[in-house]
Length: 391
Ligand code: SF4
Image 1 (spheres, rainbow, N blue to C red):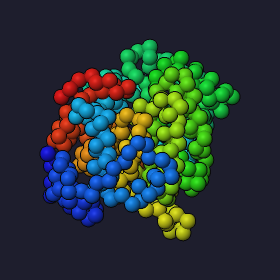
Image 2 (tube, helix red, strand yellow):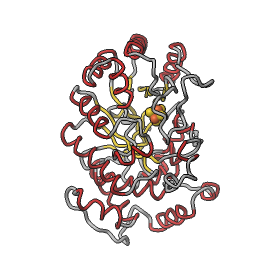
Image 3 (cartoon, helix red, strand yellow):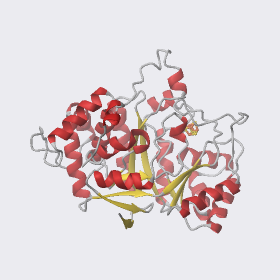
């Protein structure tokens, strides 16, 4: 049974309190009093907008939960023990939603030394970690050799899965090296890169990308990098950041692009939706500008709604992650009844969302307790969703 304390409730938006109270009152394990509609077969792009706009939250949640149960019949919720390692915070893209990047000559700009990198990996392994998520800014001076050397020196010392370099980084490394995306991926893979995170997708709608990250690779390039990676046998995740300026149509464009690529390649292991955190970002600072003040921060209810719809629309992606990093543990627990079957990562270190002023400190035990008290069996997994141990 999920436990929500008085202090949790006092920190919530009133709309969220109302919904969560209603959910608890209805007892979500037997939602017979809900106005259930049925979804038969695949949701077409044409019918998606109506479903996303008009279906009430609890019906969406119920349908997504039913789909999760069909895909994961063992009542298991998984998580991975890993650490985010950001090798540099210098970035030429300067996305307007990002609080993490720094100019090259900024006093707090950095490139991680190998000693620091190795120390972080040792700590991860000591805590039972199986993966490191290596991501960084698009540094103007780092060459392909910097990346291959980093990968090779990690693999020479440690047995750990390197989940690294999102599509904007891959494209940046390729263009600096004067090589194709495929050739660059091949070289990185041969140097030790195992799998690729789905970062940098934000919303796969160029209309929104132009507003929030005008210098970042466009939708087609993001999809091309992922398709090339899948073609080389590498597995990747897909993400979606929402809660800026997008409309429901943009969310559907994003989900449809992911689903179509997955139909062709089958290379995505999971889908991870999360919400924009405006603290310390340019978008937050630009709010007085009329072009930017339309952004509407996503509430927990918006999050649950999009999460549930994603579960329903992405019928060809088995795993959907809850985002405790942006939502906190309580909403992430609720997300397990809105289509999510995975709690993501323990994130022994996280810097990007923290730079936006959002920092939930969570231990492995907290995650196991959260999963168990929400009524599921907790299990540690590897990058490829193989179960390693139960708790
Ligand atoms: S989101 Fe990534 S690409 Fe954009 S500024 Fe931040 S570090 Fe750079």
